[in-house]
Image 1: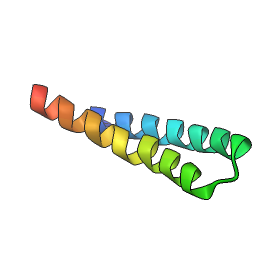
Image 2 (image 1 turned 180 degrees about the horizontal axis):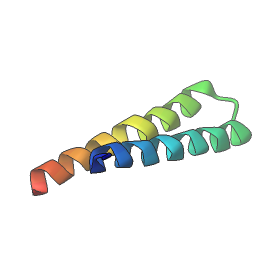
Image 3 (image 1 turned 90 degrees about the vertical axis):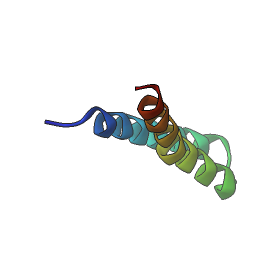
Image 4 (image 1 turned 45 degrees about the vertical axis):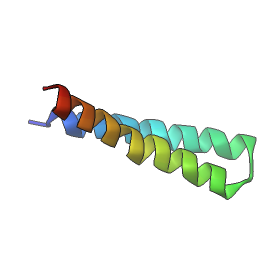
Length: 56
């Protein structure tokens, strides 16, 4: 069985890669591309997981 947290992280990872790819089409600024990838792929699922833990 796959936990809810793992499913959430996998979904955000896929979304992060898609957003990163979209960002590469819009700008060549690697700092912006990296920020989008890390923000959506790592930071967002961490915030969601922590919020779920705190809320019960």
